[in-house]
Length: 173
Ligand SMILES: [Zn+2]
Image (tube, rainbow, N blue to C red; front, side, top):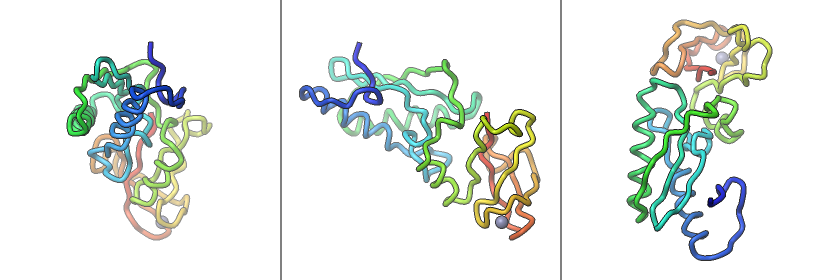
């Protein structure tokens, strides 16, 4: 079995380079819902193997039932086809994706985009569904939830009580 590039970066032969190209094409696909972050940064691209020139891509859905999952899979397939790779997508449900897999870069980009990055699940308060959401603009913790659903089902609508700006919060799972 070919090891994932996440675990192994050695250059052995041409096929490894092809795999690196395919990995980089796939990981740079932008999330269709949050077009500031790549699926690599979201941590949902789990694995990519090349078998007879075909890219076998393993993707973990973010939120189950989120319509973005199919859009993301189609976007990966389209990007790889454009780069010359036939593609097959495996949806990996286990281990389930968590917002903890979002990279630091991804978190910073979400914040720059005006979306409060998810509070890490390791945070004690998150266990009780009582999260402290910081305003992505002024970092105030004086925020209130306006609605459980923001622009998409994956986000909640918040408002900052310091700068009065509404913002989306990327919900934890
Ligand atoms: Zn604010």
